Image 1 (cartoon, rainbow, N blue to C red):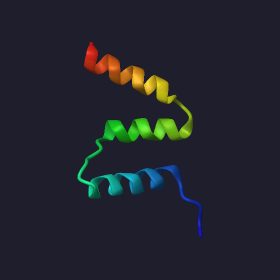
Image 2 (tube, one colour):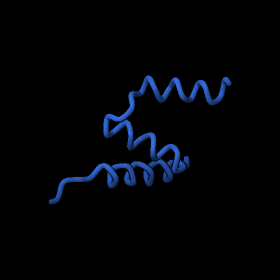
Image 3 (cartoon, rainbow, N blue to C red):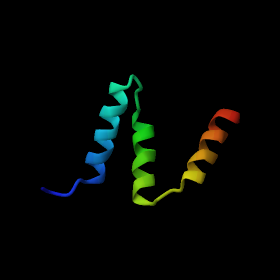
Image 4 (cartoon, one colour):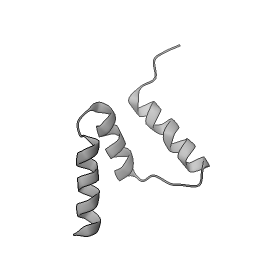
Length: 55
């Protein structure tokens, strides 16, 4: 069995999330990919979300 790629793992998570009744957009998928690749930290993501919604 071939190892799972990050893109495949993200798509599996998106499908699972959709089955639970939630939807992830391209922006969220990109954030997840950056987290998986170590390009961004969860702290930075939280900071960005706070800035986006709190001005």
